[in-house]
Structures are given as structure tokens and as C-alpha cells.
Amino acid sequence: MRAQDEVYLAVDYYNESILFWADTSGGLRQKILSAIEKGTLASDGAVRMYRTSQQNYQLIQKAINDYGIVFHEAAIPREV
Image: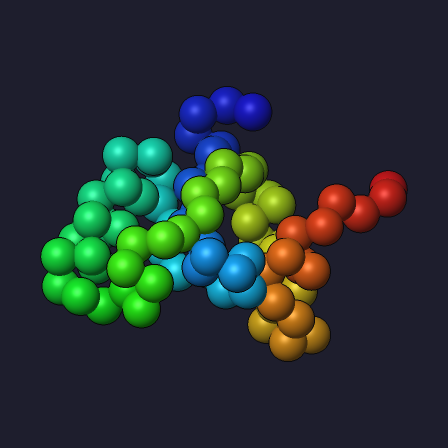
């Protein structure tokens, strides 16, 4: 996976919804820290972080939006 194809995700502690995404891990950390400082994270900063490809991120988002499923169900690897 090339660096420009990577997407970094912050998902709530229960792996249900994507809270933030960024093109770099540093950018994602900044978004998380900013939310913690503002007090907008209900979990006091307890998030799970993932790295995936831009293509996989789009497929995950499509599954979440089209089928109303949670992140951990949408992110299950599928057989080709």
C-alpha cells in the first residue's frame, strides 16, 4: 500500500462508527487530541485507530451508508 493511498481512521471504542479520518497518522492524532481538549469525545479519548487503503475506506463507507450496518460489520474482509 503506497503512502498516498492510505487512510487513517479513528473508530469509537465499540467499533461501531467512524469518528474521524485523515490522510496521515499525525493528522488523525491531531483531530483526536483536539476533540479531547474540546470535550467532544464521549469516551474521553478511548478510540481504536486503523489504517486502510482509500479503496477499502470507500467500500466500508458505502456499506455503512447503504445497509445501515456498523463499522465492525462493514470492515469484515470479504471473499473475492
